[in-house]
Length: 175
Image (cartoon, rainbow, N blue to C red; front, side):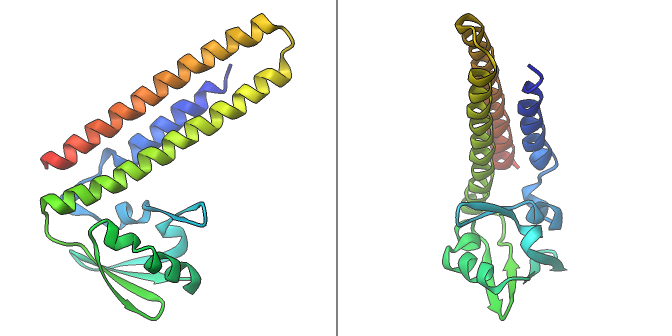
């Protein structure tokens, strides 16, 4: 089954997102990769607004769609992660607070959110592959064999994803 490459790609994507993540130096690149859940759809922050650096700890977010901005404010998205915001028309000024244990824990929420998004992606592909196996193969033995291989690969990927999450969490807490 060549489809197992998709699982490795999901792991690589998660690893790439946080490999160079530094809590002491949150930048435009890190902010642009934040995923926001609006109406059961995930958006990268860079796809819904323009991010400009004002100074070391302040960023200006210029939103293209005011409805998305209203929903983000209504959900307290940035406040839930420990950021402070100031709003003006279609813009938000995002203020990154000083490092503290509370802020580190809030940043861990971002990491955990990404972990669950990637874990859901693995699970969605698992379901898709199981359906394809049942559609494309007639023999019960063959189906069972492929399902065992798939489940073994899924378990491996989920464990590896969990290990990556724990390593990144420890890195953030210890910085």
